[in-house]
Image (cartoon, rainbow over all chains, first blue to last red; front, side, top):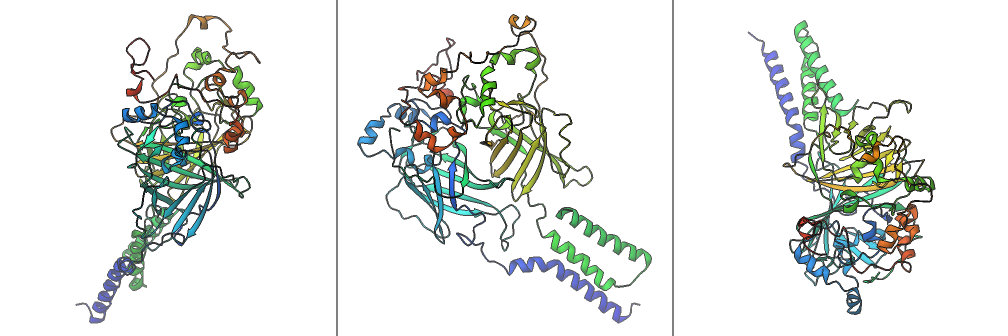
Length: 256
Length: 343
């Protein structure tokens, strides 16, 4: 028969093992702390000056393309009809020269970006071409319900790497931005339209190169069942610049 | 030693120690050793030590950027947006498309950079350690058309000597940075950075950053070439996960044939003599662009170049060719070679 003290030791041993197995669960249960958001929760530093490096769709981005140049855009017949009637002089005369500078199009415009924190929960992205400003709202921000604007309303949050625990703040991650409520405009300078119901989802990532260069990679998906036959996907890259010496705000232009 | 290897070592060591002590009848310190083993198991089993992204799948191409370059192909002498130097430009101007029809070139592959500039979808799969199946030894990216399979070695092996063999697929290693797989490719054969003869040399190296966001896969490719580029050439491209896509892992077998009797002429090498390329101003006329823009260079990649062009470019009134990608908008023909819908 096993002595009493061995029975006690065996019981204690088993109890400790069970407690240790349950420990992580208990710790997690006691740490419901929500991940930080906005500036305090930033997983990557997007602030600074960035320049668009135009190596793709050059003839559609660096110059105003001809009427009817729809290459690369999955437009539908309704969209084609509107684009065929594009009249830049009319847009200019009616004060609609910013139509190709709306949120679904602006990141494809050859431009420089100046990214700063407007406040703890608002990331501000200024674009020199067309002198536009996008605001990315973090946290509990609610849409204003006001009239649609060129840059619409953008809700943002940080995406941590796969497997990150809620209490952890990882060393890297991505920014996800969803933009709606943009005023109807053009996806391309030559009048390919997007509707007021268009929605754009973006993922902003950083890349650091061995030579010290920093790149911003934006994966964008524009959805617009009125004017697109499928979501329009694009990937755009921007190189970080040391300062704003080349920052050159210019007004919108429908013609050039 | 990586975290997964450390975890495996610790668990194995703890279990072996415990087994040895049981077999030896040893009672020393067993009161504490069992809970310590349990502690290791509890803490590590609750942590995601494999906190990376599964890239495997069928990634369908969406030609939503550079449609013309990727599908019908670029015009001759169109180097806009390429950071090429004078040597590259001179070599590119000698290029004649017919060289691709020569029997010795028909079965050649483009370089691994073609994943960035080509039209193809991607099939990606992993090769796992046959003993410890949880470790990815390599990722493979399909070859499909005109390109070899790219193998991304994840096991920390070094790049071989620059004097060794240069395979069509190059030699690539990768490492995770959070959820981003960053790869580095060397041993790239000389080739093209645009399908109209803009060259890359065998000194070129490539870094790719591979981002997966749900069903979207974006690859930023950055090519450096001390021979032909004045600064890195960066191209970004996005694919969409499509489980129904049937993307081949490798190209079909290729058998060279005589495509034209012209190529039966011994010693024929299609080319343009220096200064004699007849297409040098074709794109310039078609798009009303200055010839210097068409001839490329790093300057053409930056926004200030657009401002420089402002007073030099007159927009063509109407697009007349390669105007749209949607089959409903003109690529279906009635057999006459003309689009069914006028553009």
